[in-house]
Image (cartoon, rainbow, N blue to C red; front, side, top):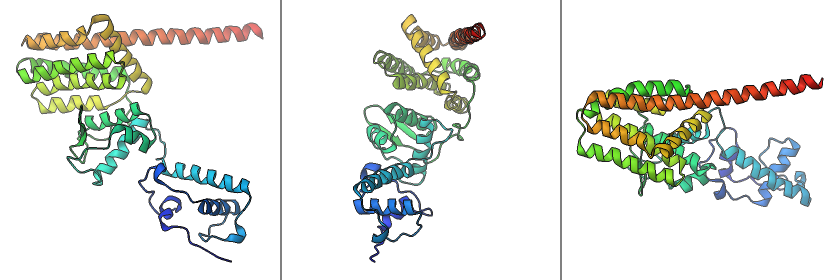
Length: 328
């Protein structure tokens, strides 16, 4: 009876004590004999790591099942375990771990998002959300036309991904903080800062017209963050950045984004231009009131949408009950 040890590199994939390798599934080469070996030990319940020719199933069906079994096993082991975290947060966490470990040094450019989407087996919008989340935390800097660069090994905030706060509470907090930030910015806004803010409006328009939802959301956040930075108060800027890093549920994010895009369509970007005009005025009260009113409009529209959905749900429930009791 011949016995052959399987390659040591596979210990990391199939061993219980070793770390899972940081390798894309496409880079893993599966030999037919090794597939059959692993499948035979699976069928026999064997814990040995020796290849036993006498124990190996040899039919074509078993060989086919063996390769299928191995591929599925590798995929399961290579993918990070899914948790209650949303996909973008899970990917963001994995990237932070790689950056903290020194795989990507400060100043290094991350691989293109199209490569990262393949590596992590997620959609491109999910990957872009993950990169935006890293930028919010101060780990990377997204430079349009150039790439995503590492600027810190550690996030500036604690992990907010485990916190799920109601959208209305988040908007209420942002309204309070950003109204005061706008008042501060109005008193000291420089030409360079003003150009940065208006450039973000151009980005918002471009992404909106291209129907790029992820880009639209990112540009919208950058618009508000630029105003916070123009306040000249580091504590205020950090507090607002923290509020933007706290995320509501996915359904509420969609509702918020769709509300902003409706405003963009209905008022030809007046939401943004009116805020900028109030900053240009140099009058703190004007800027404070305009930012507060802008958030109040959004909150009212979201409440209207919530009310409409609640009424539709109630009507469907009543109809279901009516149909049930009429038929019994």
